[in-house]
Amino acid sequence: MSKVRFRRTFTEKERVSFVKEVLECGSNILVAKKYDINQVQLSTWVNNYRRYSQTLTPKEPKDEKTIPN
Image 1 (cartoon, helix red, strand yellow):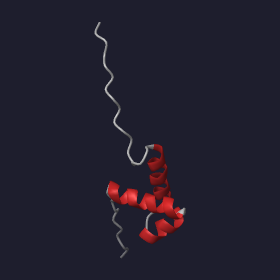
Image 2 (spheres, rainbow, N blue to C red; image 1 turned 90 degrees about the vertical axis):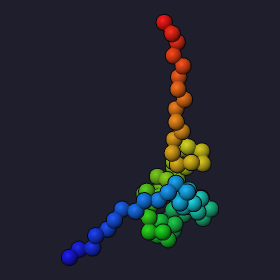
Image 3 (tube, rainbow, N blue to C red; image 1 turned 120 degrees about the vertical axis):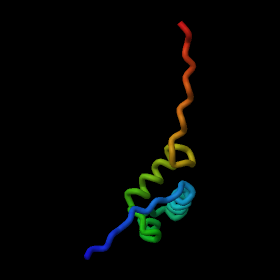
Image 4 (cartoon, helix red, strand yellow; image 1 turned 60 degrees about the vertical axis):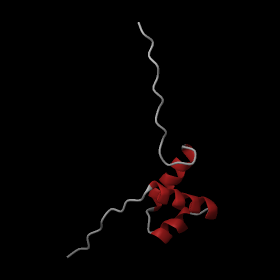
């Protein structure tokens, strides 16, 4: 019988703490091993954190005002 692995989910707060730890120590490999997180996933979180200015999710687009005809 094989071992069943469940997909873990992390809150944004947890992900941000992992990312900050990567930025402090400079190695996503060490942090990924420490918390048993896929290195590619952690790299994606780091890139998103840098891209979206201190958060991991893009900001909501502003509603554009429509010009009446």
